[in-house]
Image 1: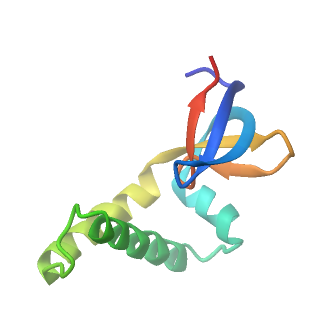
Image 2 (image 1 turned 120 degrees about the horizontal axis):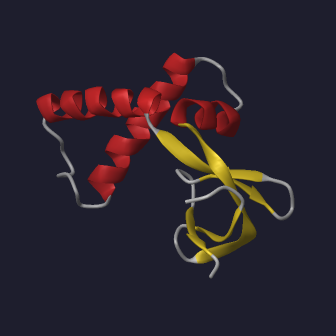
Length: 109
């Protein structure tokens, strides 16, 4: 996808947030630093991993009580993801910044 693509954005998949411009991608760790106004990567990584495990459990993708060995595996994988993956950066029309890992979005046709 090319830069400066117009997109529609939603919160929770069903609440419109507005429109903006997809301006590129940033490392997930950098997005978290901006979102949480925190520079300590260890704290941010722990928040990311905890949120991911919670999401998988509540979505039914994992059992409510996750075996400890599975939790350790998920945490290892998510830590690698946190430091190595990228997420879309969107500048909303009001000037605020959101990231693809926070919201739902689609290109405006």
